[in-house]
Length: 375
Ligand SMILES: *[C@@H]1O[C@H](CO)[C@@H](O)[C@H](O)[C@H]1NC(C)=O
Ligand SMILES: *[C@@H]1O[C@H](CO)[C@@H](O)[C@H](O)[C@H]1NC(C)=O
Ligand SMILES: *[C@@H]1O[C@H](CO)[C@@H](O)[C@H](O)[C@H]1NC(C)=O
Ligand SMILES: *[C@@H]1O[C@H](CO)[C@@H](O)[C@H](O)[C@H]1NC(C)=O
Image 1 (cartoon, rainbow, N blue to C red):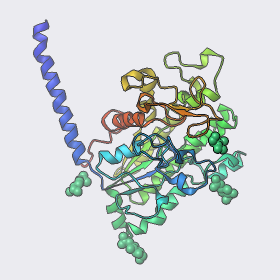
Image 2 (image 1 turned 180 degrees about the vertical axis):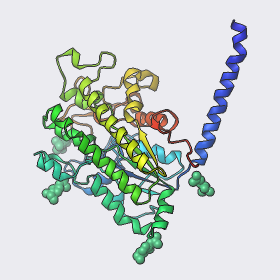
Image 3 (image 1 turned 30 degrees about the vertical axis):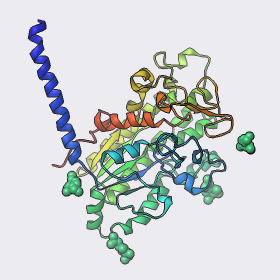
Image 4 (image 1 turned 45 degrees about the vertical axis):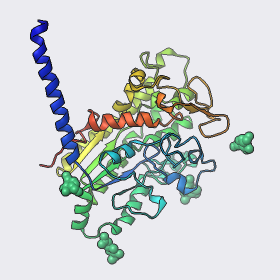
């Protein structure tokens, strides 16, 4: 038995290696001439910082940026974000933030703003929580920036279809803050859940608007497993063990909430794909890419687990709302790559790198981002 299974094993290995090189061969050919991105703090490479609207811009201070850039860039992490790893995969420069105004943006630009919502500020004013928005640069506002800038890149429909047809668009993650603000202010889960379809509607409308501007390749991410975020674990800590997933320690209801958002989003994206068969609309499963950190952190080198922050002000998850990362009373770990979580809300560069790897080379983009559909 052992002997006879050996040759078939080596053939399997050989086939796997061959399939792997085949895939890489494809990924080399699958290039984009530019990358445009929208979203919130998971994608912002400096816009919020450039608005100057923060009274305590901790993201503009050490230790933000300590791992890769060696200085704060306005990214909400110690280093690169998923959008940076995607840019690098396709040999594109890391995206400058739109508000940096200037430089060459023919290879792309980033319109994402930390704190941004999918829905416009008016909605939050209507439901009485508008006062806590960090920024009014909602997804619509970001699209307006894009459309204002567009004539610098192309004018006629044909020019724009040619130019943007070769670009990759990253539309999100966006929508997480629409819920965060409400949860911070103590809104009930059921109430927040009731406007998920509205949020999805905004994300899908933005995607369609980009298609009408000439986009053909679009990646639309879903939400993270927010029930595993040290911020939520701290703010919604519960004496009831049943509120936690016993296998990974995350808050069950919040993760179900994120999954609900994601399933609605996927459903709507499928409809959009049917409506625009010449486009490639890719759902990026951020939830699926990040949840393994919580089940097997060591596999990713997260020796401190996935539920405690590298940078924070103490407490069971090292998240203290009054001593957040970058502020007095918080401390940063010596080796951020041994943590999945950076500051309680955002992930470390190491975690974003692992996510990007699984989005690009694994099964967490549907259909796969690195598979050609040029037929
Ligand atoms: C990739 O880039 C090369 C060189 O810039 C170009 O000739 C080719 O058409 C591009 N491929 C795709 C699929 O866009
Ligand atoms: C958002 O817009 C409102 C109304 O124009 C303004 O009063 C508020 O200061 C803005 N908030 C931010 C954070 O820019
Ligand atoms: C589009 O038209 C404007 C106004 O005529 C012009 O300034 C701009 O250079 C044009 N853009 C391109 C890409 O040709
Ligand atoms: C933080 O601590 C420094 C030095 O102790 C102090 O000067 C500063 O005012 C503090 N900042 C805040 C926001 O409390």
